[in-house]
Image 1 (tube, rainbow, N blue to C red):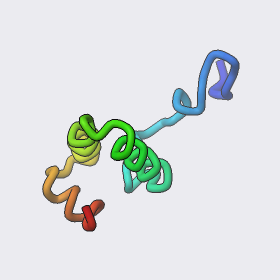
Image 2 (cartoon, one colour):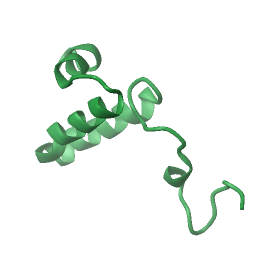
Image 3 (tube, rainbow, N blue to C red):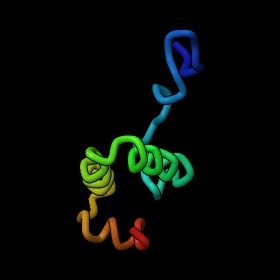
Image 4 (cartoon, helix red, strand yellow):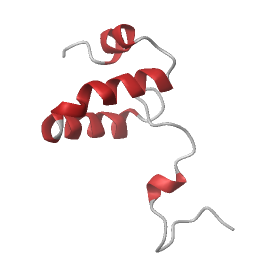
Amino acid sequence: MSNLPSDYTSWVDNIKEPVTPATNPELWYQWYSIVKEDAPFILDTFIENTAAKMELTVDYFVAEFLPNE
């Protein structure tokens, strides 16, 4: 079975590593903007989950990757 997209999969299914500001900054910051604008009630969870994937504290993550927030 190949990893090529088909009618039954999407590009998200083919991502091999977590999307974070370190691994895929363009995509992660796009997602961040969408969540911040359209679903602010889950923004803290989104940030906490990303920090956990990167094995960072939330405070360090925010200071390093969201310094203007």
